[in-house]
Image 1 (cartoon, rainbow, N blue to C red):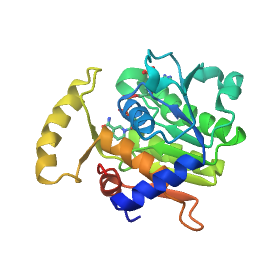
Image 2: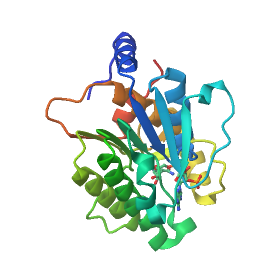
Image 3: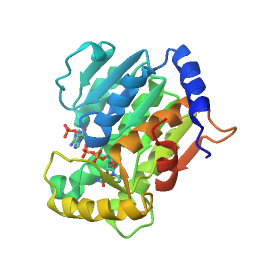
Length: 241
Ligand SMILES: NC(=O)c1ccc[n+]([C@@H]2O[C@H](COP(=O)([O-])OP(=O)(O)OC[C@H]3O[C@@H](n4cnc5c(N)ncnc54)[C@H](OP(=O)(O)O)[C@@H]3O)[C@@H](O)[C@H]2O)c1
């Protein structure tokens, strides 16, 4: 997918704003999710933004005037089907780690919660689902992480949205608040690599967020219900313009 230039993007954004669309974000409290929320609000792309999460976030200020929050129990998601009603676009930046949740907990969040949310979103009228997956996601992988990510992708695709955009970023670069020592070391090393080869092994969360938002304002390619954006495409689409 060729990234639009600044003038094209400006016009795409203006056209999109006129549509008065609404969106929800899953995982807005996370590192990518919070950048995504900030970018969506900065560009004033949606008439209403709903954050769906397991806890309420402290959001104060005029910039959050059209943001509402739905606190849900992901283990009883059908009880919160109403939270998913009436959104044109759904963004999903949900995820945990095996270290935090154990293997079963990781599968539950990164595959089952996502699939269930996607089904409720589709039933609620969502036509474009944007999923943050990962580089190397592969249903046949012998690594649990990559396999589960591949399964999540396949299950979301099977829901049958008019459009489904799957983002496969490499290692996320950000100042993570939560302590993940292994990831911290990796991130420091990749931060150095990124100076030499910016798109090879990592991507800043802010770039992922911008790429998601830019993807949404671009029209779907004819007949392409599912699009997969690998790390280089995310870099290209997520440059500041
Ligand atoms: N780390 C990397 O380098 C990397 C690379 C490529 C792809 N990814 C993938 O990208 C996605 C986003 O990553 P990120 O680092 O931006 O996310 P993050 O900072 O870890 O945030 C994850 C989000 O998921 C929510 N969440 C976690 N466990 C939950 C649970 N049990 N129930 C409900 N909500 C839960 C968190 O809510 P709370 O704030 O309430 O905990 C938060 O909003 C993930 O799927 C991740 O696997 C990560």
